[in-house]
Amino acid sequence: MSLDHEAIYKAYAGTVVSIDDGAGAFDKDGKSVTLDQSKIDSARTTLNAEAAAIAYQSVRKPLYPSLGDFADAMYWNSKGDSTKLEAYYAACEKVKTDNPKP
Image 1 (cartoon, rainbow, N blue to C red):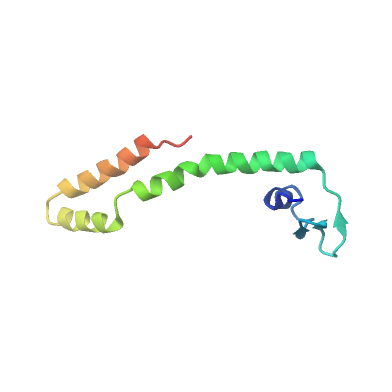
Image 2: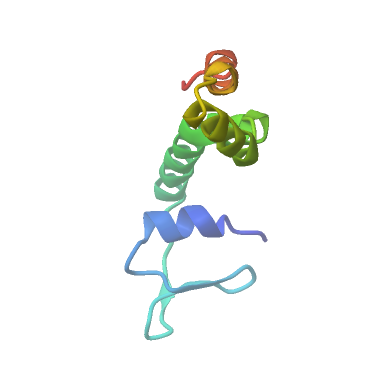
């Protein structure tokens, strides 16, 4: 038997402090906690929705130009040449446009 630890901890926050796939869930005193599968399923649905709401962040992160590029663009901008900074901002905007928030 394999239990959904993450969903159980969410569904029974403050109650369940340990989980053993073979023995079940336990409170802080080591007493067995009776699990309600519908409560666990609801917590899993919530966890999945929370993960989906921020999934775009992990997609965007590797696509952004580097902070080194930003530093270089800022240097040249301070010297009166804003073309690199404008290009940097445009690249960031493209990442956001191509990978919108849900």
